[in-house]
Structures are given as structure tokens and as C-alpha cells.
Length: 110
Image (cartoon, rainbow, N blue to C red; front, side):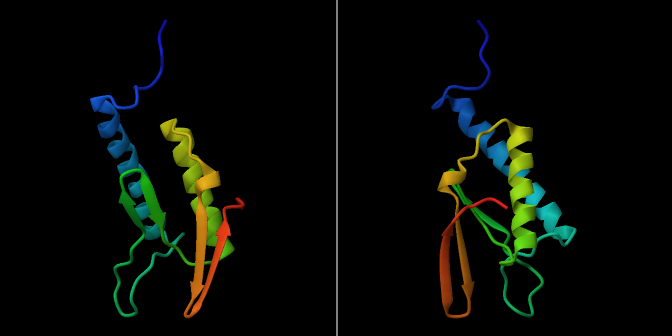
């Protein structure tokens, strides 16, 4: 009987996860180059932070408008289809801030 995938804890699973995360990062960078999303940055600097990754957590940064959230949703869905990984959207949290105002919402999809 053949199975698809790698057992969690297998030496290859970490390498495969890193490769998949790199592909997702490249998708985000490409979207930023096409000005579909904007990252977080300081005024006067051209470099923007689009994502931070640590272990299996990913932080994505974009402008807090519906258009960019739809783009991120499409990127996540496309990555999920291409990689075969299942993303847990219940654990996704959206954080909005505007100077001193801070809002926290659960992911509702777009």
C-alpha cells in the first residue's frame, strides 16, 4: 500500500517544509514586485518587510485594505493547492493598526 507524504519527525520533513516555505516567500515577493501588496516599512526607505517566518509560524505584512487581503487570501489558497499542505485558517489572526489605534480580528476570509 503506498502513502503520500512524509512522517512527522522524519529528517526529510523539516527540509521539505523549508523548501515549501521558501516557495511561499517567493510568491509574496513576486506579488510585491507587481505592486499587488505592500509591505511594512519606514517612510523614505524602499525596502519593505513582507513576511517573517520562525519555525512553522509566518507573519505577513500588508496594507490594511480589503484589496490586499483578497490578494493574500488568493496567495495562501494557491500555495495550499500547489504544495498539498493544509493551512489552518482558524488559527489565522488579522491585526490592524493606524497610529495609536489597534484592532484584532479572527480571519473571516475575503
